[in-house]
Length: 274
Length: 321
Image 1 (cartoon, rainbow over the protein chains, first blue to last red):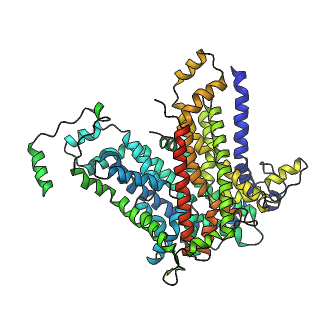
Image 2 (image 1 turned 60 degrees about the vertical axis):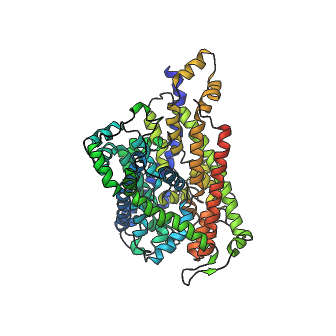
Image 3 (image 1 turned 90 degrees about the vertical axis):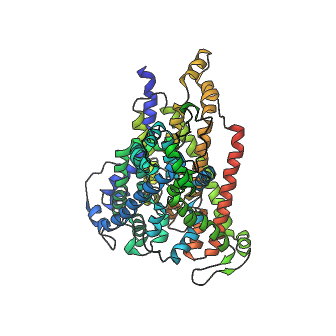
């Protein structure tokens, strides 16, 4: 029995190592002096040198935490916006019987397939007429208006799986829909809300395209935009420092991944069903 | 006014009998118009968002696609001129070619990897959740600028790949700067994110009843025959779901190509994805009219592709009883 399982584990582990090797190499390169990065492909650094982190942190116009903070503000607001607006819409789709529900639901699903690039040009025109370019508003306001249909879908799938008897009992006790939503459905939907919050944070934190377009003022730059300017800024790239700051940029995602991986994997599994 | 009447009625009359929970799937309760209002109330943010950020922009960009518009002066009507220009714009054709090669090579590679690993991980391997996490992590990170920077370095002239090749006595080229290989590095980066579809496959595999396999084993079916006759047909809905999702995702790739090529889609336009060219025309030279026409063509392409997907799905997707 054990003998038959060996080859599979060797294969799985070996492949996992190949998958993660680039990441491990980046971590080890970040603690090597830049000139040795290009001589030594091993992931065991011979010397531990945190200079890349201290120098990289201050290599740009602002210290690196300035850009991290800009990113965090947008990501946290995006999480709040998605949780509120998408859960409201999901409750309506999953629990309320109103005219045009099927049509609206189909429309919502259709927007799932709509690439941002189709909308970005006219959205830019709209935001520039509102004078919102170089503010956080274009990145945050849409989230408060349930623009991320994916999370509506995810929450609808989850709420449909909750027993209706709970709602009915509350109805008999005289609760209105607002109270049922807030008192019964929301507390029971914590797993779906947690999944949505995690994904929203990670995707917003990683988002580059819309931040590149709407935030051209270096004072407003987020972490990804700042990182990219770091790379294309000077002729001679300080790879060690660049790697160090790239890792700092990935660290929050890695932390959330470790803390919430059950929610993340369940979340992408449930959307594929029913 | 009607509502008040109704409220008064419900206060005295007993509520209509509700169908038994078991029946709700077959017979729906009669439509209660009282839920219209509350339904629209809950949907208000979504309605506003749809109008302002989705439907409005789609119609707006349709109009803009028939104009010349640079944000500085009001749009100038051109008729079909933008679309005609697209017909003889060599860079646009190039970007379409690059995008289609990228999408139709990288998505199959990614899905085959995802399915293969899901099969290896199924059947209660010890440490399943550990492996699942290891393979899934890259999917979460890959969209970031950090990983694009890493990729640019790994496949650079003196990057990790060439260092490893040097051990074997092979002299590498700068892969990201070579017109024949640059797009390949992007395909590899997409393949590296097979973890997300793999997780969906794993969930799908768990839905297949074990009794099917047991019955097949009693009939003397070997592992290959079990895969072909049970696993594959039962998984087709999941394969279809992943295919639609990843195709749409691949069409939207931007960050990696943008960062790795320094924003230009080079070398010699070999990584000029459609989205990169759209960015260049729309936000590099503020050719908003032309970029809107490009956006509409992209919309039509994705709609046609997804439509074809659903059309062909009838032939190969198996929805068992």
